[in-house]
Amino acid sequence: MNPVVRLLLLIVAALAIGGWALHEYQTRTIEADSKLDLVRIQRDYDERAPAAREIVGADEYRDEMGGLFRWYFGALRDHDNHFPDQRDHEKGWKDILHKHEIGVIKQPEFEGLSQNHATVDEVYKMLQGGRFDPVYSGASLGQHFDIWRAQREQHENQPMIRLDFVWWGPQRKVEFEKSETGTTKRVQVSAELQGIVIQLMDAKDKLYGEVHGEEPSAKISDPDRYLDLFPANAVLGTYWLALVPHEAQTLKLEVDAVTRTASGHELPAKFEWSIPLKDDWKLAEGQKWEGATEEIREEEPPQAAAPKHGKKGK
Image (cartoon, rainbow, N blue to C red):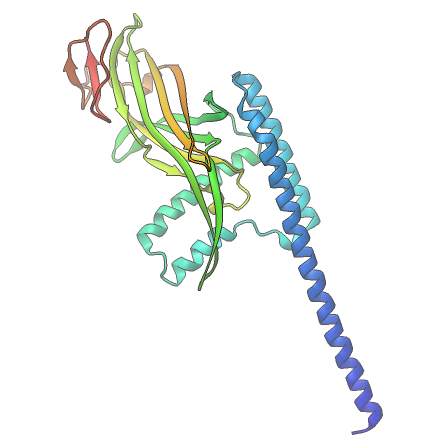
């Protein structure tokens, strides 16, 4: 081969290798800068959110949380505009889809995960669009419990009361595990909803009956498993409650919860509301309250012992 041609080929090869190396370097630098910027945004959110959760007044709390989420999602939009090639915020969900495709996650489990993904996406879009407006909100020990949907719906072939909530503030720990299918993000959340108590008051504000329950029907402790940038320290869930007697006028609702610090200290919380009952939350006049048991009440009514059963007082 002509020495000149050989030299030219070597120069071309060197330039090609150099160009590839430069591209790889720039790509890795951009990826690193993107990750660092996301860490900054999430760190700033973690610093701002606790103060908002301390606010007790409903109007002040809504204003503060609205401002917090406007800043947070605005920062994420700026991030995506600055790093358009790194705009992939569903890595956790894609990992679930991949594991389902190769058979690691079976169909029954996948159906439950898909429902979780839909729930997380619904709340995320409300937060992102500035439409998160809790119907009932309660504060306790730096935590907030927001019931954002309270309505009558069909569930398991019968009409029930649906309460969807976001519990802000439970403690968590994030770990990463490497496996044959890639690196999986694991979030350990210490968030236990110990019980729910419903007291039904009549028109004279006397106890008509009560219901005790335990864990909600659905609970998502790690919403950022499904959407990577879902605001941290949030637990989503749903309570399904039976329709209440026609005679009841007010529902007194109490939710007891506990989260634990990294050192194992318990942070109990109690959230309470007094809610005027809507007509469509009630049974028809004369319709029997299923599951209720008769009991004579003293002046100081004892607590009901059986979970998830109504107790009618006289």
